[in-house]
Length: 172
Image 1 (tube, rainbow, N blue to C red):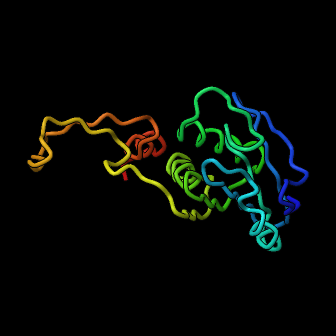
Image 2 (cartoon, one colour):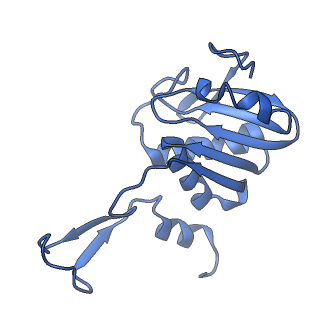
């Protein structure tokens, strides 16, 4: 990464269904910086050069962000899968992962799905869903408290409860 406002000497890597742009600089332990939603790797332009004095810094741009083109649907789950592929294919080893805003959600999903790829996790101004990662359906009214067993949940495949059961061989 050049640290220049208009981007550096980045390159593209094909990752399944997306052609992801990224830049890198420095040497040492791998550090992955995930930009906020609606931004690109330039969000890290003031920070990455200093971090590059201590780490090998990667700044990938997720699908639909910056120089990475839209590639079908854009969801946190797909961006997490893209990031997992990026770590496996480009970084090639576990990395420290820093996510900012929407990047924090992606970083969290990566860590939940593949804790073996994440050395340390830093979440900056992450967003959340007030009802949790699972959608809840209930017949309760807002003025009535939820009774035990009154709600059922429909979790998406990246929800923490399903990630843990699919990535660990024995219950925690």
